[in-house]
Length: 416
Image (cartoon, rainbow, N blue to C red):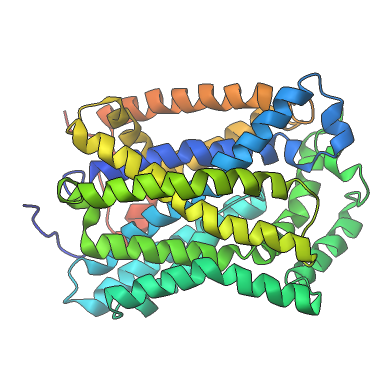
């Protein structure tokens, strides 16, 4: 039995559920595989630019594979885990609600600052700011019954279908005001608005100047996309699924939830795989909202992402229980313990490898080349994270985050 710590103390290594860290470590890989399309510039390429690459056919196959089996699924896993983490934070020392809320909001506010800095100064694909903003909504569900939390979660995941039907009927773009802001910034900075936009950051001789010009409007483009793609209700829905799992402490009772996990795995794959493959092909047909055909993207995404996300999670949990935690997955736990540090490190490496101010591979390679690069980096992150926790108690960014959250000095290095 784990003793309850005072509210002003962070969760210790003893209190942590290792399986949650394993899942975070797994999710970090999928998030990097998704984000590398942005780092490399491949996600901005026209078909003509993609066809010019010598690896065009294998790139096309890997792109469809990524859309079907990676895109959306891993940020959903991470959102689920954020929801579980927030539930743990909200439930600890529940009797002291005022102080508990103060710590909770302070934690989110610091994450918001980290996310905003990451978004504005480094990379436009940041997800941390969105997590912090959506996280502020979670306490509204604190006194809801578990059934109500589940109903809200399902409704939020399905809501993009209704939202996009509205867009089709009234022919609107909900993120257009942010796109207008981004365009106005581009006019001032000189970022091209024609097809050369896709190669601006990766052209020969590009460097610091091009990166800063690119970053000036990237935050507006990013949140235009987040609003247009209905990412806010999707993330909140997954947060609430995680909030439910955390409340029920399912993650701490996996041995008693084998039947549930087997059902999630079975039906998650049965539903998720074929519909995800269909979603991938509809994603590349060029038809987007407010086109009626674009509704297929929305429906297929809503029906495929969550089941496949749950199937991935259930598969890992079942293997974890079967082996009693004594398997190679345990080496992912340190990666998950310092997930924030690893996520930000991936940004720095992505910029250094693909942007002109670094090695400058961006614009020159497709998934055939950059997927192996991601796998190698992730393997090195596993080695580094495992080494790090031999000597230290927290990840470097996590250490700063926790100290600012709990307003107390925490020992970074382990005592010998």
